[in-house]
Length: 271
Image 1: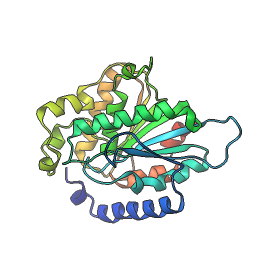
Image 2: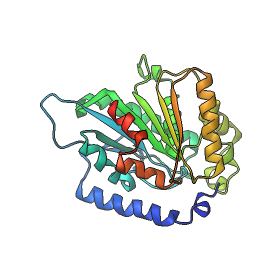
Image 3: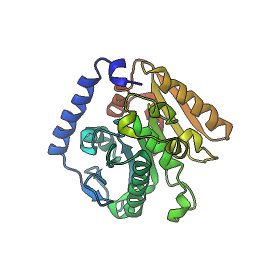
């Protein structure tokens, strides 16, 4: 799954993300930057809408970036906040340590810790903990699913603390990644495949799951979404799994900039 060779203009798109992210974050610094761990990358940025009535609590979209667990950072995707803020929705961009400095199971644990810290402070930050959409793109979609499948009772929650979860072009079985071009960097073992593949950790779950994959993506991404859809439905869980025409693995993130697609409008209206 060499995404860059499969999508010739991918370098232009990803470099554009970084440029837009730097421009946006320099002109619109986050309302809050929070460190949840010991390393510099273990942090997240919170962007709050500017207009707020007294006592009002905002819904929030939490975003986990992709990059095959080995690249990008939270600021690269800060520009995605703009569309949500205009609709009165807070935006949270989560960061984490990258491979090869840490393995994927460590990244999964970090993101879960980040979400637990965020939830502990949500009310203090004028956010409504009952109106949270957890989302991620590519490797971030994988991490969003692994966070959804976490045992949240260990943090004192009687139910999963997200209204819904959205994965854009996620990976759900790490066996394909274990054999891919970047396997020497990712260091994925058979044990990590088993413990950190959402498809191998599924269980009954009351949280609605929405998964989108681009029409122009490698077949492996489409097949993994199909497998997840069948397994998720087989457990009696609620989910929507769609292929988005006219998009590839990288341009599918444009849906977050527009918020005009039918796929996202339904989600946003529920917050």
